[in-house]
Image (cartoon, rainbow, N blue to C red; front, top):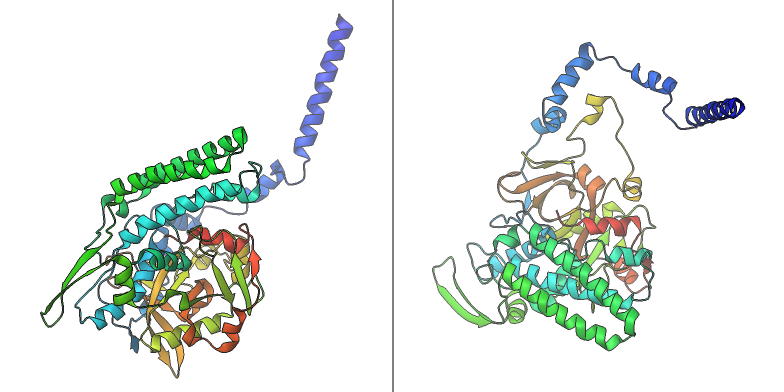
Length: 470
């Protein structure tokens, strides 16, 4: 018995020693020596204590705001498009809809001699949700044999009916459903604050996905899946009507122009788009600045659309100076430009300044915070999170110094809703612009006739495109 106890005790000691050695000696651990080295690298005295007190008790953006840039800032532009009235997407991710409709708005105001005009964003929002739901369910049917952990299938389940979108989403919706003035289908509580509605829709999407796949496993009846999908869409349509209102099939547009003359005419939404707007949206080309891929090539992004029967998003990848050149050409012709950029912590919201270095973290913390645009995309540090509209520029000798931006965050932020983007910010944080083909040279248009390189849904840029919806 004593021998057994001695043996057991020795074994425990040996095991404890092995365990201690394995933990203490593992490469990469924060061992006691490394921890001492880290802790003694800073003393909280003098300046460091003052900094700690200031940072722990204040809004960090107030402390790192570059006062020199603010003092040198002005919002004077020698090129302006007359845009009347700032829109507000409220607590939703509909910036891409707002920017798309805002880009068309100045032409309507001028054409019909209006004091102001606004499209119904809620109208397109309604159809976008229904189309996204249909696209999701059809994609579930298409991938019915895919393993549950398949990479593409898992992407489908990630925010299937979220608010975010892209330019091709705008074009697809308007081509099919048209547009209406805002007063015809105004905002609702849920169109302005979509979080709870989206939770309901997403849960149903995932529930329906499980039902369709389980049904296929049990009887392999494809016709039954499509019949069931139609019934599902009826339920979703009802939910959307209850949250967003009933979209009109026709309406009477009655308006008063600046000369106090009253006009009135009946339209369907598609007629309103064709007659009043009169713009061929597929004539607009998506240009990207994606340094992580070869320039002067044509790309298409897998699974980047909101309609099952429309093509995925495509783009021509160009140098940033070319994007600036074509943006300026469009503005000089009095045509706004839809664009998407990284709207993270690089935008100063009180003054509406978008300038590289507007927040000086480096001086405060003694660090270097600099990555190339390619690395920021590749490693997920930067993404096209927000869509806005260029409506002006400030130039000298044909070279841009800064850009006037129409945002959709209401009038409380920026210069009563307008923002100033400096040229160095364009270089670093603008990802894409939408330009009418008439402003592009033949060498760029010729790329659209080549076979596109397909970017998978998990490509770093493709992943960032999920984010457009701030």
